[in-house]
Length: 202
Length: 196
Image 1 (cartoon, rainbow over the protein chains, first blue to last red):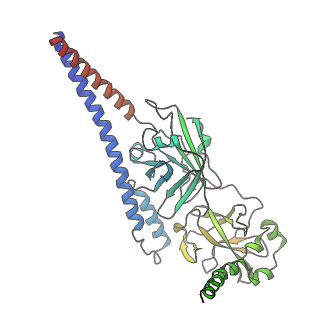
Image 2: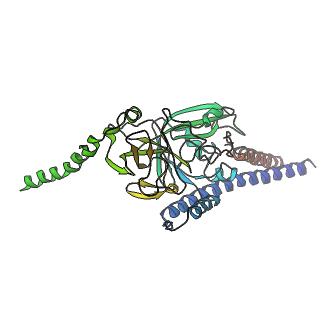
Image 3: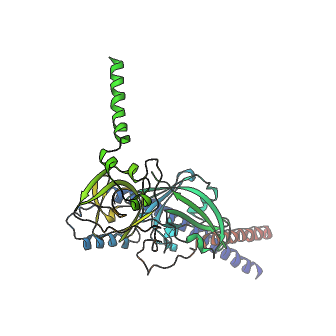
């Protein structure tokens, strides 16, 4: 009887363990494939000729711009930190799906092309884990369809989750990268790691 | 001959530099009001040209776009020494077209960091980002820049930013999965030893 129970426990452990490990591996693989595909799509769409809008009415141009934003799966930009080997698509929101495939713009903050304090979030147990090695002076690129924006890391800090002041607006263009802290932590980490970038005028 | 070519090349190479360094005569002649000079102390040095529109003189300057919304843009005028003026807010019409690198483009095609051509009124503080028929509003420039509306300003309706959740269940699930696999392997090992 004991042998039978041990057998059931053994197979349950092995089965459930294999299932969980497979799920994690699948999620990682899906995220990585999604990241590569999004970067390729972005490069393709950026090089695609833009429609000639010289005869369009202002309303039609506005509608066209708005329609681009509705394609939620299309990344808004590509974030690169060459010194850390980071290259991820930046999606329109910081939803779970988007953060699994790259990084996401934080709602209510600035946008790369329009200025202000641009907030980008990423998983600390995913693409943003490399931020643990970020150093002041390193170059950060945010490439949109209009322009490649360059920032320089000016500071890093660890703040509590309630420290919303780091997300507040700024008069000059600023970049704020947000991820959870500590970088190695099971479950929801209690703090946030903040990387500040100042706009580099070229 | 070789020396002659080199010297010629040097002269040719210097021509654009000298042309850039030389202040256009119109800029040297233009008379700014005290208000304008108080607001833009180095406006004469930043001046690239002078144009006249509807009887008013405007100096042409280069400015970097600091912020862009659908109805308002903020620029900083470039000074000759590479420094910038304080940010200046300019109201624009939704269908305005701006001069970027000599090309007229719609406001949806400009992004922060781009260099624009701006036009500063000579007699009283005022600035515009277009000089052709699609004239933008010449907003009086306040002594101190107004606070900008919320980013991407689209809005009052925009939600206040919240701290994102940037951790997943994946590390926990992976760790539990590995523990279960180790447990299952351990039980299997013990059972085999028991049988032996």
